[in-house]
Length: 347
Ligand code: SF4
Ligand code: SF4
Image (cartoon, rainbow, N blue to C red; front, side, top):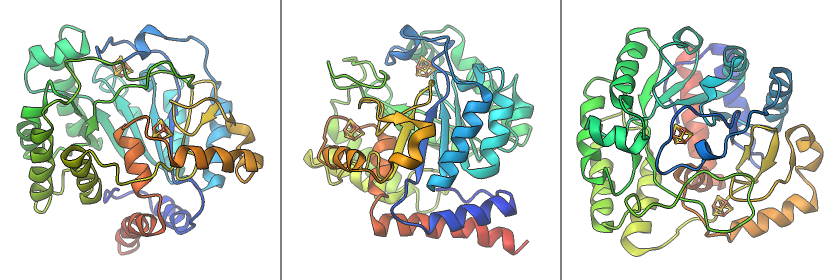
């Protein structure tokens, strides 16, 4: 997924791990349940928890993930930058994984020195309209802070990208927002508004159902996919693959899910207490530290079979991890990872 240059040793190790099929490739670790924002489409801020794993437990967990074959690690929350030990966690993560960390724009500048080795620092900006962004984030001044954060991070040499969540509220301005940031050489990493299925038992809740956010203009969404597919040919700052755009296009044009979910197969999630699930909408499977002895058990295989046919959600990250969870999809990611290694080996 990345062509950004990373450390030589790390690139080689990542490329080697990428070649092994049948192991999980992506993990998303929600390392804290604390957040300093109150986004209208999110449940997290209303369900915060002070309890979380120690630094050492997280490092041990990352060792497990590396041995399990994980290549890409997303550190999120809550706001992961609220953890006091975030510098130590980042140092450890960036040595082994293609690492992405999310911030709502409020803390990255204060922690800029800790972010220099992160592969993607994703700052959430949903609109070029300050009032609209502040409304979504439910925090006055959020837009100004986030815009300044992007500028500062870029100046400081951090690999910053802007991460808008596409919803009905900002659907018609995603193209403009994309052009605005990419013309400044700032990549865009899209999210897609989604909400958790109702009433189910799950690891924890993220997306809150909101009528203002649900994409009702499906034609406009299809048009956006077409525009991005075409713009991507010359604009390499658009961090979404053609395969994912085509998948989303089918979903909105024909209502067709063209993928099987690969939860607990190609990807998994870990919560702030170190509990694992195929995705956050499913129940706890076990603890991160017990993953090696459980990965090949019939219990996990049964869950994988259930998840394969699950159609309960459409979070973009889970779709992405699923469509690259086939042998051919995995190979195309491997190719991408080898490009990283090749770039470095030439240096
Ligand atoms: S979307 Fe992110 S920044 Fe907003 S409340 Fe939820 S966790 Fe916090
Ligand atoms: S479709 Fe996949 S990611 Fe979504 S709820 Fe079902 S198992 Fe989880």
